[in-house]
Length: 365
Image (cartoon, rainbow, N blue to C red; front, side, top):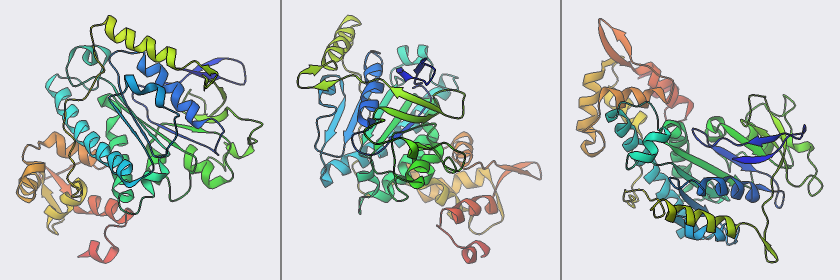
């Protein structure tokens, strides 16, 4: 999508397919405008489903309502819970799409598949004021865990997540989310913590600094990563006004609705029912560690059988490909031992130790 101009005056496009975005900065510097610009491009594609969650009571995305399959707005617990349910649904959707791609012999969603195969259309989900979700006392921890899992696996399945925040702190944005979001957009921020929370660990030390942008004076200008092959770009982002006396967004939404009608389509929706059960989502890696039962290495076939015994609903249909894909999320590969594929307990334990779920004493038992 046309997103802004570089310091050289060149128009820079923001890639959407196979990307995820983390956008932030001090209030009033342009983050919501950036989110709207990305979404305006997406809604002009009749195949794209767009969902927006705003964890605040503001009208920033109100004009998009006719073109959205889901629009939740509010700063109460119900709105935050709805965002959590969406993440649960997305996690299930990623798995479903992975199996669907496998049946079609495809490695990822392509334009042809998106246009012709039901259930593989592109999905773009926006979480505005995302810190309200991640810092919630009841839902925050699970939301953070699910966000990272979805971002890691969604790239090839046609799902794009866009997180917006005015509070990129050490607690408000999960570190693994920063690590795994391909594109960072930072408007003026106050310190190196906020800077690196949006642009990646070590960005400040490398001289990639949104802290040097002046609030108000540099409004609409952002330091970005992932837009081009360069380490970073300083971008003056496009501004499409949405004001009482100048609204250029509503006409674009009208065009988007006309395009749907022209192609004989309605607003795209996902054919799945959200899981509103408040029980925590299964943690695949923890479950794998559980079924290893303290053994140093276990054959993959045995791991699959034990997983199905542990949680039939979750794992009964799992194949070796599902097990390998889950391990690959954490850079783990099944090893070969005496001619058969095995899962090594040390590999899984190392990741769980880093996550703080087991300690060295448990790991040694």
